[in-house]
Structure formats: C-alpha cells, structure tokens
View 1 (cartoon, rainbow over the protein chains, first blue to last red):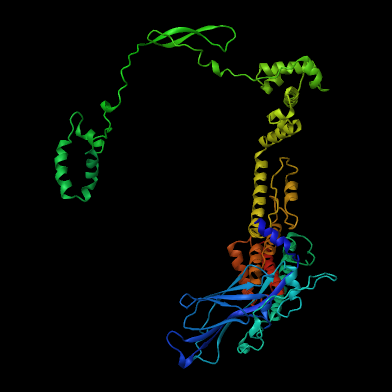
View 2 (cartoon, rainbow over the protein chains, first blue to last red):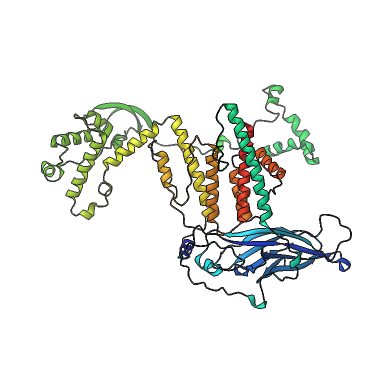
Length: 246
Length: 370
C-alpha cells in the first residue's frame, strides 16, 4: 500500500474536474435466412463505440469480450478500435465487456454487461435477413479526478467531454500514447452498420423529466397549502427546492 | 466382552446370526440377584459399567519403612520480631521433627524504601513545597505501610493528595538513585529514571476514570451512538479508499468530557469531505444529506465509474430512510409520469434531473402521509 501511495502522489490529478466519455455498446444480430443451420442461425456483432461515433481509442486501449463458454476461445481481445467482434451462433447469452484504458488514463478496467438479443420482440412473420435485431445501451465513462497528462492529451478530442479549466491554468505538454492504429480509422462514422445505430438524444428525456418535476412540484405546493390551512398556519412561500424540510 | 454386550443390544434391529446366538445365552445369565428385576430394569437392563481398572491393579504405595507420627509441637516464625511461640501439628518421621524455618516466613516481603542521610537531603532533596520534617514523615509512613499510598495519605498529618505524596516519594527516590549512582548511565535503565512520575497526567487520568465510572446510563447510550456513527462513516470511507489513497489518520478517540465530545469527533473527521455528524435527534433530511455526501465522496474515490452506477448509488442513498413500500410507490409514480425508471440516455444532466425528481416524489409521498 505504501508503494502504491508513492506512485499516486507522483501523478498530479485535477481535483473537482470530471472527464466524461459517452459511449454506446450493444449487439446487432442478422438472421442468416436460408444459410442458417441448427447451430448457426444468426450472425451477430458485439461492439463498443463512441456515442457520437468518434474514436474512443484515444481513451480505451483494448476491449475484452467474454463470450459463452461454448464458444472456442471465449475470451476475445480486441486491441484497436473499432472495438467490435463478429460471431455466428444460435443462442442468446450475457456478454461481459471489459474496457481497458491507456496507462495514463486509469489502471483499472471497467466492466459492462450486455444481453445478446437475436430474436425480435414481435413475431413479425418471416425473419428478415436484411434488418438486424439491434440492442444498444448508452452510458458515460466518468473519470472523477483525471491525471493532468491525460487531461492535456484529450483536451480537444471530439470523443471526450472535458470541462473548461479556469483561465491561466498550466497543463503539461501532452505525451502521445503509442497506439496500434495502423489499419485505419478508429471512429465509427462510416461504419458499414452505422445506419442501424440507435439515436440517443438527451433532449427528449430531459423534457420528459422536467415536465414530470413540474407536475410533482405543483402537487407539493398544493398539499402544503392544504396542510397549513388545516393547521391554521399562513400559506408557505414557494420553496426553491423540494427538500428544505422533511 | 462388555463392549460387545453394549454393541450387541442396540443391534437387535439388524441381527446377525452370531449376535442372535450369543444374545439368548446372555439374557438368562443377566438376571441379577440381590436387587429385584424391576429395579434392575431401571438401569436400562444393562449391568452398570464397571471401571475396567481393577483396584488391585493400581500401584500400591511401597510399604514405607519409616514410622510416621503427628505431634503437637511449638514453633517460631522468623518473620516475627517478638519471638512469640505458637503450637501446631507436625509430621514427625522416625521420631525426628522437621527442621527449617516456618514455611510461610518467606512470604513476608517488604518494600525497600530509600533511606537518605541528612547531608543527602541538604544536597539533593530540598524542595520548596516540602519541609524536611514532612518528607521524613512521609518516608516513615511509606516504610510502615509498604507504599500503600491511600493509607499513607489518610495517616499523613497535614492534608496532601495521594498524587502529591507519590510525586514527592518518587521524586526523592529518583534523585537519590541518580545521586548515588557512580555514573548516570548505570541507572538510566532503571524505571524510576526512565519514566518519572507525572503528577498532572495522573490527576487527569484519575479524573477521567472517575468520570467514566460515574456516567449515567443516558450518557453511556449517547456515547455508544456517537461512536457507532463514527465507525460507520470511517468504515464506508475506508472501504472506498482501500488500495488507492494512503489512509487518512482518522483518530477516533473520544475525550471523556461530555461537553467536548461532539467537537472532538468533528475535528478529527477528515477535512476533505464535509460530512455532518448527525446527533441522536436527527431530522430525516439531514441523514439523507449525510448519506448523499458520503456516497459522492466514495464515488470520487473511484478512479473510474459508469454514470448509471453513480445514479444507482445516489438513488440508494436518497432512499436509504425509505421502506420497501415507499420505494415501490416512487417507482409507480415515475411510471405514471411517463418517466423511465432507469434513464435511457443517462447523461450527467439527465441523471441529475432524474435524482431530483425522485427526491421530489419522496417529499410528495411523505406529505401525502400527513
């Protein structure tokens, strides 16, 4: 533990600064139609991508997909973006996805879990080989106290959400990481399957929640007024936030 | 053979031909004489277990060729100073009474109280608070009462506290020891020299002890509550910090002053997180704030986490005081409002809003209960 603390003292971290990497991960499964067999009815892809299809290889070094033990070599390692894996099979199971970060980012991996979906909800007649069954989840990787070097390196990268630092803040010169990027682009903007990607818009959800909050707040005010009338007290002022008192 | 009997009888459920043969043989043999059959049956129908060792097998004491008598004889005790003669029974062997001192004389131990000469007193031992006369009296009493300071304090002519007496005695002994030693290093290992008597510390210690002893039940309970709370907080912080940061020195000793108790704990809690220590009369909202604050702190300790994980933790912290039924009602309310129980697009803003919405629903439900 002493050795560890010496190591972390050597790295300067930015307190109260949060680096966030929005990602989408999931599976896409195509029925093989006439080419389907008993043991291989679908071809599916499991992947992790940037939520805006930017290259997350700037943060993620490698991804390990842990498949069902019935697969050969169920531990599949993908060393460079796009972090995806294609396989053929017949069964649905849970895939464990481990994200390993670059050494200046974080030395601990982050685990995600995703259920491989092959069959659509509705029994919509003959299975189409053209339209995949898509199951994606949106999430954000949060680094609460990022190292200065990491921050400097990803400061302007489109895949990363970085807050603005106060003016005059001096950062070290970014050290580029060695990447295995030889075979082309890491972003998924022009990915062959990109037109099947789901859209995640926070605006809709925000709107829904905001309107719900308004309704609840109105209820609260009404109830408080009623309660105070019952207790013979004057009506309370409108509270700014809901939990001033129990 | 006895063991076989014991085994033979329970095995009546699964008899083997061998057992069967021996059993009827044994049964009539076992009818006892001397006690009636019913009484014998009380023992369980078995003969009582006899010890396997026959008395005749025990080692006999070798016949001694000494003639032992016991005689009522006088004796003296070397521990006594007055030559009093008492009588007791003595084991006499072949007409020769035992020799040697009274066997209990060796237990008469006494303390070696230092004896100083007048010159030594003038040179090393003068003290503004003590006259020579008083010091002499003290030492005489110490000798007489074997350093039982409670008794000495009681007997001491002028009123002095036990601590003062101890201080003077140990101070004088220490000074004499150092003065008489050929060189300082000879005595530096002596406990008197190494750890001198500390009056103020002793006074304080005894005061603290008496305070603890005289605590009312109410105070005891409050103490236990506060300590448990502190333990809970340090445990949760320790768990999230394990293997990452160096441990913050959380000194959790509670002073015995009842007035300072909360302040002492507040001071020793780490400054980087502003967790308020809730008192026993806590309002539910402050404990929710404490939980949320400690959850935030523990999240910050992680190197990396998912936004959904953070939201789950915060939701859990906010509903920590709510029962299962309340939580279900919150979820029901969310569904009625058309909001996803787990946000589909968990961005920072969405999660924050979602958390606030949940808290507001809790507030509403609490109000509705009234």
